[in-house]
Image (tube, rainbow, N blue to C red; front, side):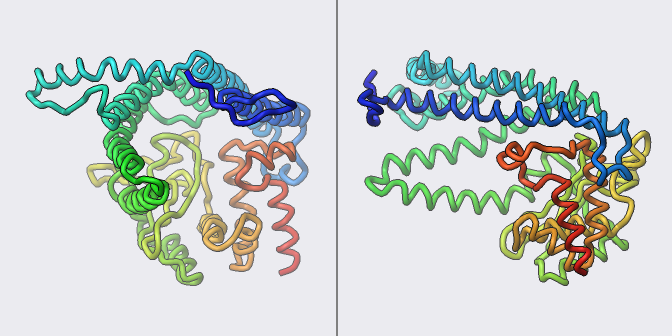
Amino acid sequence: MEVIVLGSIFGYPVSLFAAVFCFLWLVYLWETYLDRRQRQVVLNTSDVPSELVHVINADEFSKSKAYVLDKMMFSFFHDAYDMLEATLVLWFSVVPWLWDKVTEHAAPLNKSIKNLLGVDIGLSSESEILCSLLFLFYVSLYKFFESLPWALYYDFVIEARYGFNKQTLPFFLWDRLKAFVLSILIGFPIVSGLIWIIKAGGRHFYVYAYVFTLIITLFLMFIYPEFIAPLFDRYVPLPEGELRTKIEALAAKISFPLKKLLVVEGSKRSAHSNAYFYGFGKNKRIVLYDTLIRGFKFPAKDGSTSKASGETDEASRGCAIDEEIVAVLGHELGHWKRLEFQADRFAVDLGYGAYLKSALLVLHKDNLSFPVSDWLYSTFHYSHPPILERLAALDVLLKKK
């Protein structure tokens, strides 16, 4: 195999293989270092922060600490396994070996399909697009089974231990099977088109490839909420009432083009709660998890009313006040035009500052989020600022009102 040399360091040649290999290990070691820093912070934090003592008691704090430590231990072993797997794949040239196997299997497989279905699909060692799809199928099939034990342990051991997992085993397996089949039905035509463009595009193939992927992305943004998402979760319109009226009033106040206001049956999967919006142009939707709305009763498939999402030991989960939910959405809609702290300021300017504080505390408590973070770890890993920083910033904003 030809060795591609990228350059030299101190007179020593650096191959593409060595560069990729070293880069992967440097990233892994850096991530492990960050995880170790965060783990030490968690272990060394024994008391509830003063800002949260009125919301979280000692038992709840200990539970959130145990939860985050369990997740970090899981990530440590999972990441180590992934790194070992990537190292072996690179070191033993598994990718070119698998490609050789694909080209070996192409003609016999084409013959078998022709004998079985009477159709010659043209699969041979010379058909690059079809061989690429067969290669991706082998990889996808391997990843489907390889990831299964990890996902089972995470959902049915760790998440179940802390009362979050609500899936049954058949539901879990059926969900993953649907995702696997959909990835093939949607992904394979896209990959085929992309390979064809690269082969036929000449010197400027990257321009055509970019336009193609942009069109596909925009197309999926339209069809995903209508046809794909409902295959995995049930969505119903938020019933008429005060909460719906308040959310619609908020959207109108900030000229947010709200087309649909939905509730997703998240409680069938997990006790975690959230809310989000998505869409393109004037075709935007807001989605609330049913676990976010305390006591929400999701309609059964036969039209009757199912049990409330928090009817047993979860009666205290979710936001009990409409304004808390509206405040969460005020923050989320702030992302439509702003960054994180600016989104909080946006919610405060709308008059929901105090409710946003209480809603953040409810979500933090319900999701067993650990409140204390290492500054370097949070900088690299958190999409939101740590809860204590957000609460402090909100207090400053509220004092100015």
